[in-house]
View 1 (spheres, helix red, strand yellow):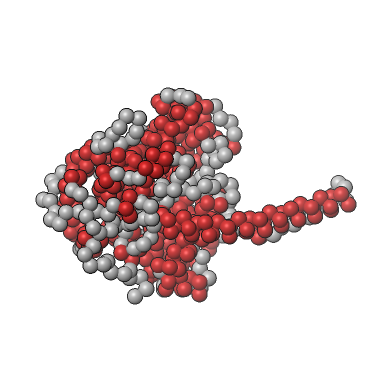
View 2: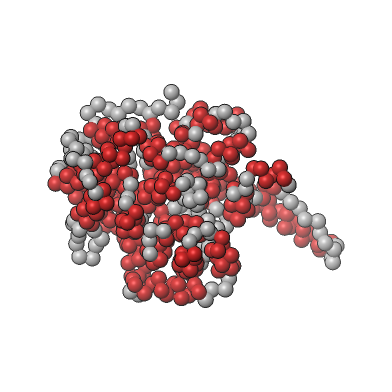
Length: 469
């Protein structure tokens, strides 16, 4: 069948272990995940064995030092949060050296951003990952996919996202102490009187979060606008920050947001022309064609464009799309593995809903299905990391982004040339007829993508509203 991935090679214990975890009956999955966490704790002192990891990437530690879990699982743990805490502490304190982050943080950096040349930790990694770093990366990666306990999410998200390292790096660049940065950004933000601050003040009350979070939400957004004046504020950030604040303190939320927007997502994701997210929509189309060819052919045949739905998924990081348990699990993976998780999640949703989508023949019907996709949490996570996506990696996503970026920039160049032509035409008419109001030329091709505000309003609209207008 079109959606079935290739079977793992015989003798590949890591792939076989993952298959057991991902394809067992739903009623056994929680027990298996918890048992697996206990099992992974025992690999700290074991040497690497043959076999590929669950998601091997070019240049990643796993591609150089493959490791597989022990053959026999440990007993079923009675306290999963205590188990996670033990895992976290054992990794966070291992291999620590003066002036460096923990071995776990370094391992996360090596995997999530192997090509981030500007990162201080990528420079540290040039000497090659140690065996300890590989084991830490492998264990944390599997544990994160199994689910992070809510009480530990702030610590896990801050470390895995690179937020802790970013705070120290910015402090060094500005010649300030790390703890003074967020108060300084906040103080400047509260004095802002520009377009960004005005939109923030309008958006914060309608975010829908608890009243106690409204002021922290406003301060985080204003501080971010100060630190990133080229972006300022973009609608959808309020929903992301509100979700982070459910688990993190205000300052940690700020640095996680900075790491997300500045490092983990492509450039120009939240800028006015939205080049980054437009490129990702083309990348997703290519991935749907590759992994879900039957669905792709059906969508093309009926002229159904998924980008008006999936753009909202990516910009909001699935906030307001997935129910909270599933959303939080997706964020666990996203903040550890990077932006490729956005594609894994989209592909998983489309695969789980493929049979429904193959029965629709219009955009309106597709909208009804995709506006609030109902995918059981376990099924979604299993599909995200299933064998049908074997070979999917950060490197493959980066290559597709490079290919489609050229296409988007060429589109923008054509649009800009057309705009220049229209401006020259208006100026010519005004010079010929001074004082008259020149007719305004319009061309729909001038806007290859709706601006973010208009898009979000359309995306939140119910199809039934059109019938009453």
